[in-house]
Length: 139
Image (tube, rainbow, N blue to C red; front, side, top):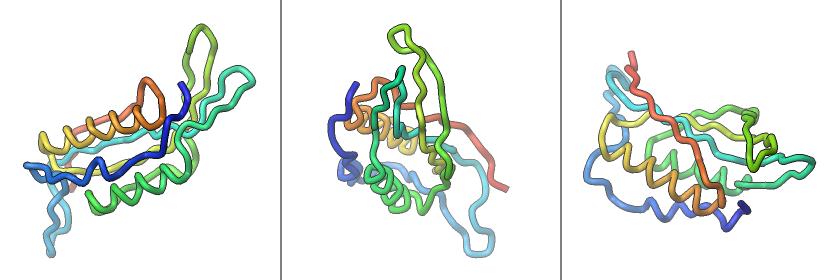
C-alpha cells in the first residue's frame, strides 16, 4: 500500500484514565514491574527492484517527540532493522526504525499502543505495523 499522510500525534492528546508513564522516585529512580514496547516504524519497503518510502523522517521525529512527552523518553536503534517476507508471492525487504519505550504496567498503556498501531497503519498505508509488548522488571 502507499503512504497516505503524515503521522498525527494530536490523536494522542487525550487523557488516559490510568497512568501510562512509569513513576520516578528521587532516591531510587525507576524500579519495578513495567511494560516494554518495541515499535517497528516502517521507513522503506523494497519489492523487486522498486523502493517505496513508508514513514518519513518527519514522521519519525514526530513519533519521538510524542514518546518523550508521554513517557519521558525512549531508546531507538540507530541503524534501520531489515525484515524479510512475502507479499503477493514476491520477497520484500522492510526497513524499520525500532523505538523502545518503558511504560506503566497498565491497561491504559496497552490501549495507548493499540491506538498508536492504528494511527501508524492509517497514515502509512501499511496493513501491518508491529508493536511488541513484553513484561519486564526494572532493577
